[in-house]
Length: 136
Image (cartoon, rainbow, N blue to C red; front, side):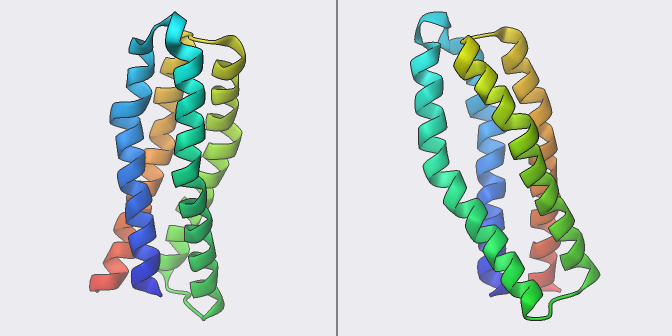
């Protein structure tokens, strides 16, 4: 189970780096005319990938905890998972809502990119932590 959990976390870690370095910065280049359609498409498509993986990561993390995994490394990894969820639902989702309602805005897109570093760093640290459990 730990290996599967780690695989899911690493998939999400790779995805968040792609979003941070490729997807979100490209929002600046879409242009006002095409932005609404592009942003809507991005949100719908990324949700089909991210939502199941995040739920699976949380479920396998809870399952490992239920099975008795209490190492400090694992417990810290859960703290970072909670940080990702909080950031997602209290920072990134509201910013995406601003973009959906207000359309293209350089300030809002830059805010999205800047604040998404929290998730990027948290998932990276989490990936290193659970990965170290698999090799150590």
